[in-house]
Image 1 (spheres, helix red, strand yellow):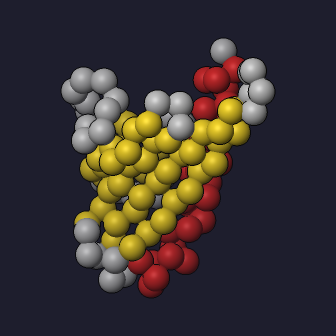
Image 2 (cartoon, one colour; image 1 turned 30 degrees about the vertical axis):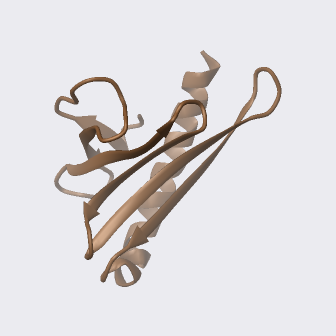
Length: 112
C-alpha cells in the first residue's frame, strides 16, 4: 500500500473476511480501524472503517480479467452515515488521491 494509506501495527493471519487492521490515512491525525467485509479470490476485495451511523467508509476493489495477462481494476468508495454528506467536500479530495495511489501501487505489484 502507498504511504497515503499505510497499514500500522500487527494484523493477525492472512487477509480474509472479518480480518481487522489499522491504517494511517493521508490527512488524518490517528490510525483508523478497518475490517475486510468481502474477499472473493481474484474478483473483489472490500473493507470498511469508521463509525456506523456517523461516518462509515467502504472501499471496494473489483478485478476483471481481460485476456491472459491483463486485469482491469475498478476502485469504488462510498460513505454513509449522518455526517457523510456534510464531510464529503473535506474527505473527497484525499480519498481521490489515496485511490489513485492505491491503484498505482497495485499496478506496480501486479507487474512484478
